[in-house]
Image 1 (tube, rainbow, N blue to C red):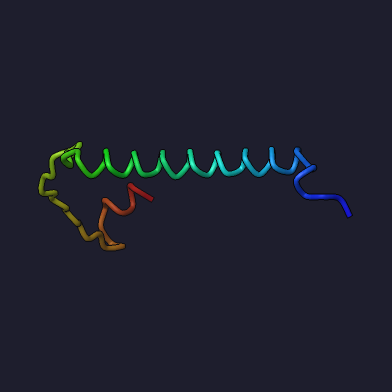
Image 2: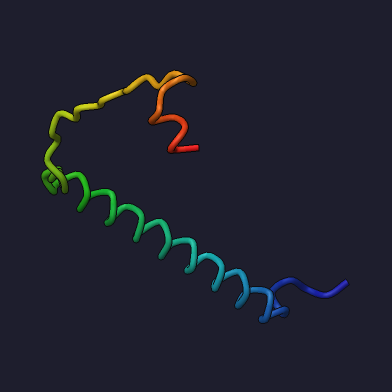
Length: 67
């Protein structure tokens, strides 16, 4: 059975994975902190909307021209 300390490529792979995880966690923390400090800005102001509904009977002339 080989000694685990002599397998340098295993340690290199583990170190690479650890550094990638550390970079990902650091980037997530920095992004979260920057988002928390920034004031929320509305991109579009909210305006009330009007909705008009017109009922059309099957006997009306408007319905016959639409269909």
